[in-house]
Amino acid sequence: MIKAIKATFLGLMSLAFVSSAYADITFVSWGGAYTASQQKAYVDTWSKGGGVTVENYNGGLGEIKAQVEAGNVTWDVVDVLPDQAITGCDEGLFAKVDQSSFIDDLVVAPVSDCVVPQIFWAYTAFYDKAAFPGKKPKNMKDFFNVKKFPGKRGIHTWANALIEMALVADGVKASKVYDVMSTPEGIDRAFAKLDTIKDHVVFWSSGSKPLELVSSGEVVMALAYNGRIGAAILSEGKGFEYIWDATVLEQEYLVAIKGGNEAEALEFMAHASSAESNAEQAKYIPYGPMRKSSIGIIKKGEPWFIAEGGNIDIMPHMPTHPKVLKRAIIADPFWWADNGAEVAERFGAWKGN
Image 1 (cartoon, rainbow, N blue to C red):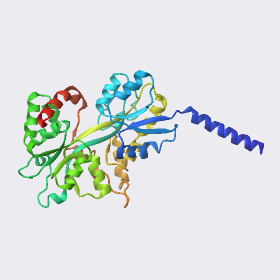
Image 2 (cartoon, one colour):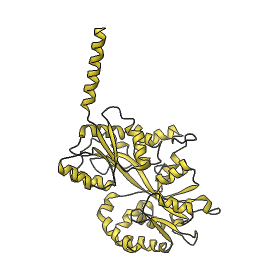
Image 3 (cartoon, helix red, strand yellow):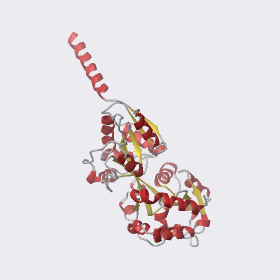
Image 4 (spheres, rainbow, N blue to C red):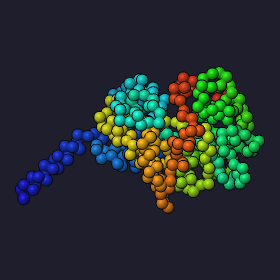
């Protein structure tokens, strides 16, 4: 009896020691269905370390810089966009990462030495099938053709993706878009194409708005985040149809903040960026994994997406579907870092700011 009590006591002490060896971490992301998918795929499946607190933010490096400079880092792992990843790594805000376990498994090379892969999300054109009982729009040229397909278009209030899409609509191959954009004539050409729909656009800035615009019939087509479109189709039964042509893919990464619980943060990031975890996230939101092997896991496991009425095939809704990638544009964060401010100023003037 005494031996049993002693063994139990030692076991509990051992567990307490293991738990205390791992600090709790704070994981920061963007909120909504996206963070909910990360909670289910990464946080709820994390068993190696301590607890994980999830918080939301609005992007940018301001809060991260303030924490690091004050020596009071309360965030450990943050979901960031490529420009944040590049700048934050260069400025020493983020810890360097051993990328050997995934570097050869990525659809594109990582933007810095401080990141692990998350997902691709995309700007994608779409419409309601009921709005086009006859001939239906199939490509970006159709999106810009208001004579062939009359009606308003919903577009966002910033230049990213619109410049690329306008050039494809004007006949530039997706693979050559950034070559053309790197010339003054190319930017002029993009704005000239935007002029052809200027009198037919409704601007949006909130991710839910383009779905409302299309559903209400205020616009006949819109650009939106693919995850929003997919969620409306898969979870709400909306009769939306994608126009996958010239879809612009954006990258999303995780970083560990220097001065926080770096060891635990890096352990958690290794778990969150595994092929299995990246694939798991797609059970809850139709964003595309950055790891090639994750896409393979999803293909083999179809129907993959978890829905109330039963699982649904998710690959047709993925921006990283091989057929989509053939016609897609992977956004170049370095081009936008170098030219974004100038293009944004011109775009603001174009839309009447």
